Length: 167
Length: 300
Ligand code: FES
Ligand code: FES
Image (tube, chains in turn yellow, brown):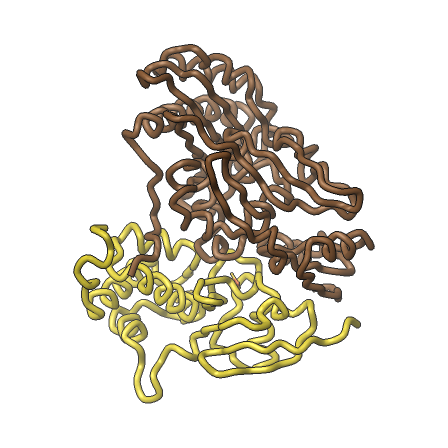
């Protein structure tokens, strides 16, 4: 058995150190080692997006990242989205629009939505559907998810004038 | 997943030395490798993470051309205004490889080294005259991309060798390029046929002076369709000539029947996509069109 490695990284703003085997994915480290089971496993081959987390500012599928690759990185997961006493706007929008049923896809959709709105605060419907194309949902039929994303963008307000160079 | 060791060398020399020991695989974005290890198709004893090697993370352009480190992510390529404007077939390809999440990690070097016949970046890079810079125990060598692939999942890399960078010569004035593919879905699929083209026009913008056409998923390896390109050189940029090139491209394919398409369908679609890609590349060369992204590039 290959020796375990120490990985130091920042998860949801707090510094963490954990031991993992080289063969462990980030998804497995989060769920099995760190007990952070908010991130879901769907396909484990990169197709469904249920395991989406934000790694160094970019959304990634954590089933296709090795935990050892994350040494020195910043990881954001669904556990870091809500504020201590209340849900984040994106979570409320998903609830209000009934954008989830079984909920297995939802943490991935929420993380991917956050990544979308960070760079593109006023996405068109086409841009939303394109950006979320790597997140699969067997229950909702997607329209309600798209509405929830639109509502999140609306509540957050438009981009500041001039910031998008006229997009 | 099987048990393996992991190393993350900081220099190219270290990486070559480690890889030369054998039974290892380089890891860049991991979006192919990790899945292949999970399914047991690859079982290397050692995984060598190459993302911390400076040469493999380089993305640079000057008047000679473009240099793309083999581990540069699809996302970084899309974010480059130079790639979008001057090497737009690359931007077309890397913005449709997998999902947005996959594009955050996947590299074009990895896409080439996996050497799938349907790799989206291959036809685009063939059209743009890409060269592969390879390092190995016996030194460096450069291989034109059309000589890189040797079969499905196979390429010229020898034991201990590593793809360091991909280079493309700077396009001449009035050049344009495009990559497009046919898939039955809108996103997140593997090309049934993929076509990359590049063209250069004369000063009047009417006559094609240079052209290259790359084809994907219609043979055991990506194909440089030289005969098809010959139908265009010195000819006016007209639908009739695009059609002739499309017809010639069909003759250069040797597709297979599988669940994603029949031989006949793939041949037919090859010609159609060659025509459409030429129309778009010519429009780009004339400044009438440009790469269109579905994802906004970070701005505020
Ligand atoms: S579990 Fe990672 S993409 Fe499906
Ligand atoms: S709510 Fe069930 S998969 Fe999306």
